[in-house]
Image (cartoon, rainbow, N blue to C red; front, side):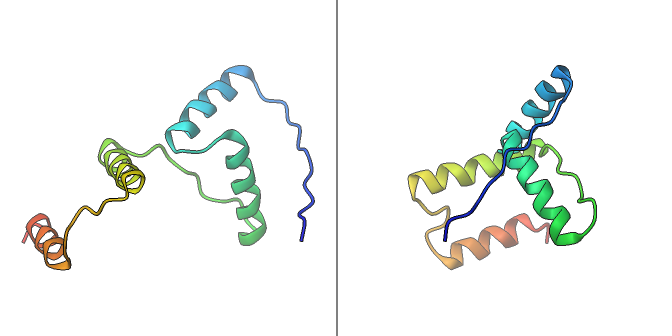
Length: 93
């Protein structure tokens, strides 16, 4: 089934658009994707959705590591035992 789409034209201050584009790029989104996500959440929640934030350095590093692993198609751990050992080691126990 073919989806029908419509163009949405909005006026935004150039500076706000530039700053928003930079922030959204940091989150891995385009402005168009963010607007579609926003509108979808409004429909689903019937409310103004929560805001997305730029990830902190630790989260960003984890996202980059995950993307690198997915593109290289490799696993971080060679076994479940290795995964659980790492979880125990880093859980602070």
